[in-house]
Length: 125
Image (cartoon, rainbow, N blue to C red; front, top):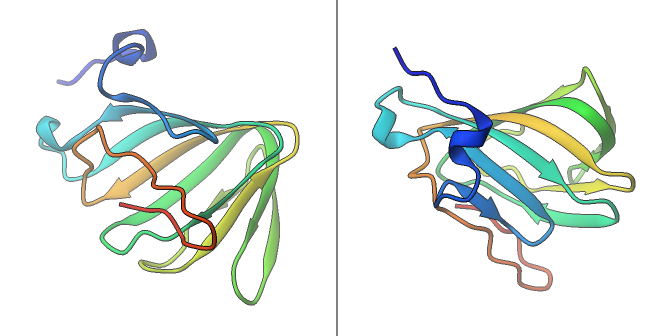
């Protein structure tokens, strides 16, 4: 049985500040579950171009809101909304007022990965 609280993760290598927000990795590869669960916060006024070539991702908004955009569509994200881009699907995530997400990654993350922000280039791991 795995029991872990957010407080257990804060201040550790699994508490990652990715400039436009934070990602607290609650379940990681070493937990041998095959997936990662994060408690992610997107800072107000930020916009991040993302693409995960090695992982599937699903994010469920539990607080605040924002927007996710792909090459052919845009969706408003509010509490109670889930979005799940395809593997390698480029998407832009933005928030005007801040947004909290519970995210699942498959396969699991090591837990200390961080985004690389380069102008015009998507970030991912």
